[in-house]
Image 1 (tube, helix red, strand yellow):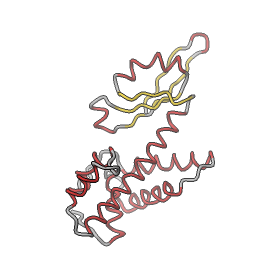
Image 2 (spheres, rainbow, N blue to C red):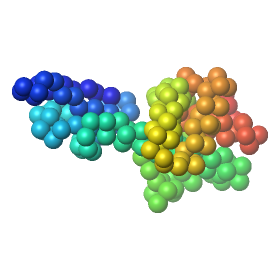
Image 3 (spheres, helix red, strand yellow):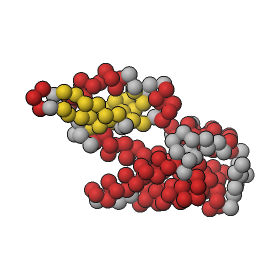
Image 4 (cartoon, helix red, strand yellow):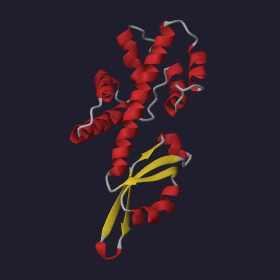
Length: 194
């Protein structure tokens, strides 16, 4: 998250909440998505700084809105990784050429940034930390707590939060969140772990 403070005349200091998405690669390439909460004037004043960091920069509402959108982002990412992990195990147990299958899936409606960025992790069982399970566990706690507060049901999100917590409890918290594949493999009796 990036917190930017802007002096606002006699009103003192106002703060924008500006969480980011795009991971390490997005930060290095300065193509992060930045979801901002705060006042329009402060957002306009901070835009040059934000443009140095990202390409998709959107004011999502009043202060706090950026964090809410970031929580929704983490929900979507976790559910997407879990679905990809389940598809990988399903494909492998079915005897399908995994590389070919992921290639064709990536070109269709099932394609996503998650699938594109995590395909090599899945194929190579390379779970070197990028965004760690421990951090996604923290974020899933944020989204489930926030959803409870506003009365939003998250049936799939709550299940995936439990799967993330389970993986963490099994000692995989320091691995990349694509290691959700390990949990699916364990549940399926299909381990190719190194």
